[in-house]
Length: 239
Image (cartoon, rainbow, N blue to C red; front, side):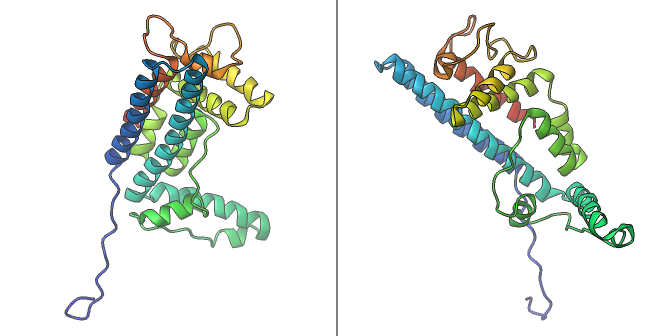
């Protein structure tokens, strides 16, 4: 409260999307440093394969957190599209239960600049990270939740970039579950024509993810997992 007795509202702290990106890249750089040390070490081939797997898994988990934080940062700055999306969803839900007349009276309204805590609660009441089944799913969610200017960067990703996202999501799910279904989906994602050559599998199915991620595919000199990390960093800078 000010000296005059008037209530003074604190300005909503705006999250810097550039900071979200730089933090993500810095975290990936730490993984890359560890990989460089392991590659030149005397560790066994089996251990190196395990490190390649854990590095991809860690990077993919960081990616999920990064995209969530980026969504939060963009919505924190402009929540108008999120409000519009929830208006439609809530009205449809009310209509299905109570009819058109009642649904027409439903109004969802968010402040244009929503506090970070509120954004996270709206996106998921339990404040989990957003989970995307594919690159296309991420693009659709961006179109649903983000202001046009921010959603456009997601929509502008090239087919090869969307396919790269699908590829590392497929590997991540396989590493997490090790099921036949996850192996099948991983191999489908890895053989897609749009996946860049350095990230794509050949005609043979991938059964040993560590071997696949530790492999070097000319003309690259790095392990394949390192090229996945490079792809993540490049795509992150475009969003």
